[in-house]
Amino acid sequence: MRHALETLFIVLATGSSVAIAAKRIGVPYNVALVIVGLLGVFVNVLPHTPMNPEIVLLAFLPILVFEAALFADGHALSQAARPILALAVPGVAISLLGTAAVAKYALDLPFPVAVLLGALLAITDTVSVLLAFKSVRVPHRLASIMEGESLFNDGTALVLVLIATEMVESGTFDGIGTLRALVVTMLGGGILGAGFGVLGSVVLRRTPDGLTAILASIVLVFAASLTAERLHASPVIAVVVAGVLVGRAARTMLEPSRVLALQGFWETAGFILNVLIFLLVGMQIQPSMLLDEASSIVLAVLALHAGRAVAVYGCFWLLRILQGERVPMRWQHVMVLGNIKGALSMAAVLALPTELPYRHRLVAIVFGCTFVTLIAQALPFRRMLGWLGISLRSDLATDEARATLIVARRGQSELDELLGAGLVSRREHAERRAAFQRQIIASEEALREARAIDAKDQFLEMTLLQGQRAAVMEAGQRGIISLEVAEERLGELDKQRMALMNEEHHE
Image 1 (cartoon, helix red, strand yellow):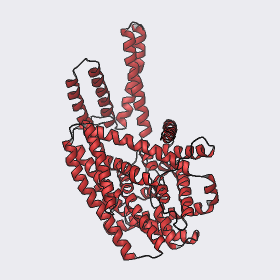
Image 2 (spheres, rainbow, N blue to C red):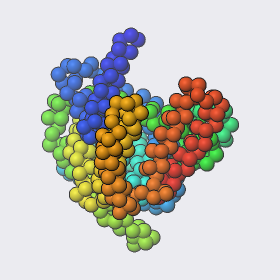
Image 3 (cartoon, rainbow, N blue to C red):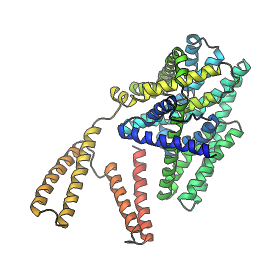
């Protein structure tokens, strides 16, 4: 036990250090973790720690999926329902078959094994994509489509992995039985998720504080996941549906303090698990494995992108013809380029039965595709958004104006304190304060021209509310005001924060 705890501590300490450094230099932290994990094992700095696929699939995945679903904007997802479902259901199947067709002839794999490889590579990892979306402003509908697809894609792809594994083991393919199993599994997961979502909303409404709400949400996640697993339904879809319903109910029915406590806990839990998983991903990749299957990995990467391209362009072409649903071509390019593999594909291939034919080769190819897509696509993905003209303009100028405004106002505040303490003359104070005031006027004019400063400027409103909240908390802790008054005022400020967050979701 001591050795296991020491190993876990080393991995977490390394992961946290790499994540901090990556965020400071503007590199996607998941890519940095994979590279450091690979190099750490190669030079014998990090201990060889095998990634247990059952822990990833049964313990980590429900937490990550629920965290994403809890933050998802249910209104935006419902408005983008047709593109999301097109990519998550027929899109996954088309991507699987397209990848399998190329893999069968290019890699000389038996067709059932090629189908299994296609299912493994149909699983997407959107951590890199969503990280880029957070750092670069993109159209809200595009972000909603990709976020919604990632939520439901995992459930569909994992069900197809199980069906393809059974096909490889038996050597037969029952089309009707496969379709029936897929429909039952997905519908079962959706029905169970809806039931647990309604139950969880009722329970959360009756929790007295944030701590009990967090505990109830943890029980809800694993109750939905384990029940779905027991009934042979899709645990991922069950958790996704439950998370979306609970998130919507929490934002409309719970006190803001409990909503913020829930979001803070699940955001922290999701970040910690992502750090741990991606570092472990790097620690599983062996250079010799990549070199031995280098040609197969390159062909598999081409195959998975070919399958993804057919799925994305084909599904949206049909949507335009049948439903009149138009998705800009540039957005479709982003969805193809955002086809990045991650920890879930690796966990799924590691969970395959040890005696399964071609298992060793499948592991090498999936590991290689994960490494290549993370390095070649996730690392420059933010630049790709700029090349495609996806990122919204005037962001840099607005940020620069805001930075100047913040610095100038802080300078005026410091000058006033120095004057009050008698450490600066009135003449020098007046001259320097006037210089700061000129910067403030110029910055405000630039922000007005960009239409970024008005009564509904969410950035400024949120910044002011955070400052006010910190001041009230400090006053309560120092005894300047009573704790009852502090809690009441914090509740009012939290309501205003939640209202701003809801406005931002609906933009």
